[in-house]
Length: 321
Ligand SMILES: Cc1cc2nc3c(=O)[nH]c(=O)nc-3n(C[C@H](O)[C@H](O)[C@H](O)COP(=O)(O)OP(=O)(O)OC[C@H]3O[C@@H](n4cnc5c(N)ncnc54)[C@H](O)[C@@H]3O)c2cc1C
Image 1 (tube, rainbow, N blue to C red):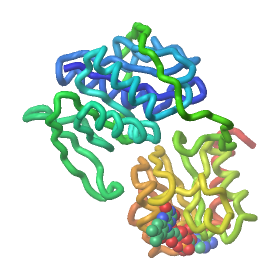
Image 2: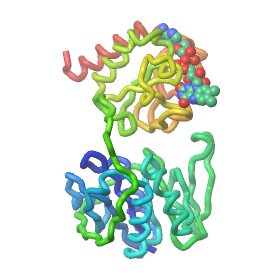
Image 3: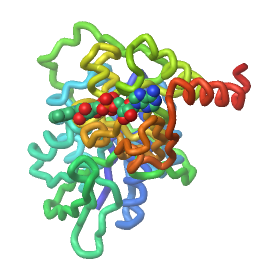
């Protein structure tokens, strides 16, 4: 058995979720007494060999700039060929937008069993059983993969990045890249200090903020913490905030280390997008708000009094004033 980890990148940099996938793949390889290798499509500014510190011994790179923009069909074709060339048995993806676009296509193309949204290392004591999160994190399922090639996509924040030391060798892959039927015309990047999907800390506001004119409270706290901003769906529906900030069942699902929910009731549809956060802090004037049940820390009170004090305290702590 050999393990191949798909390394995802954006704007020339390797994503944090890929470090998690590498740590997961490396641990799995140790469990199976084999080696873990990485595969990267496209080009990056980061030093790829330094990924060896997370445990990969080799990284296969297809350094074709066409691959810096995702075309799921081309990626699937190229990866299917690479997996067969490298003779990998287990392929690990991050369960992010890119992993969700490619892993199922690859699974169908290679007739390989896929477990999407894994949260733990497979149990290999009797077959190959992977624990995954289901029903928006409300339950777990255990899925057995019986196919020769196995694909796993790992939930963000489900596995710690561990550094074992070492350097990876880089090996150029020579696979012909078919021309794409998709032409990228323009990229509109979300402006803001921190991209929401990658953010370690998120400050999020709900209808309790009363209107867009009060969003400075959220932005000031986010700025002080170096956090991204998010919102509940009614806030985006009312155009107080752009839709790309809406988190939840019908919005973005995020898994930051710290999620601060301000003036948000904690409806099940909202929780579905944030309940994988490591630590949840809730600020709400209603002590009965459902969000408190999911909170690690809660403050019952008026956000218009609490948030400015919190921001001032963070700024003082960080020497920003
Ligand atoms: C099919 C479907 C999909 C949905 N998908 C999503 C989704 O993806 N994301 C999502 O967010 N919602 C989603 N919803 C909507 C969801 O059910 C809730 O209606 C929504 O999350 C409520 O948003 P809110 O908490 O901002 O507003 P509210 O429910 O109005 O809550 C406002 C909260 O602010 C508190 N508050 C008010 N004033 C203050 C103050 N001064 N200080 C402190 N606290 C205060 C209140 O006590 C209250 O708890 C979906 C609904 C459906 C039916």
